[in-house]
Length: 127
Image (cartoon, rainbow, N blue to C red; front, side):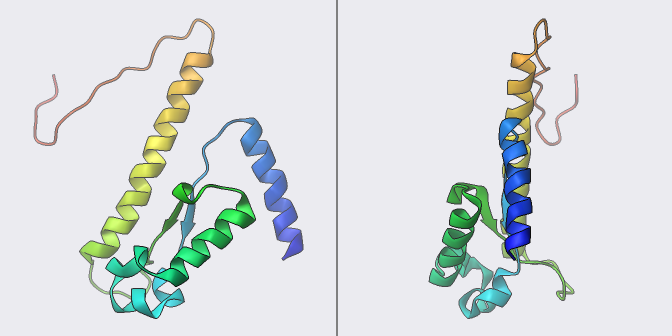
């Protein structure tokens, strides 16, 4: 609705001023496209989903790289690897964006101490 778009525009303007990264989850892609309903691996092959991403890109003035098509777990009784890949890819990108934002925020603060940069491998003991 036009009212919702106006509210979103105001919120996005404030978020832009704070330089907070923005990510959109395009949900229910399996309901939007028969090809994806058949197999969620087809999500990036679907012209319909590509069109939806472009619509959201235009509507929100965000690059397509910030728009992640995902399938919801609303009626599935079992986990599905391909659905998980879409969801986890979006979560990884969200965490990367949050990390980048916090690193930049830390660098911008006067007299700030750099954030600890520790990495751990799965299964390795913490030192």
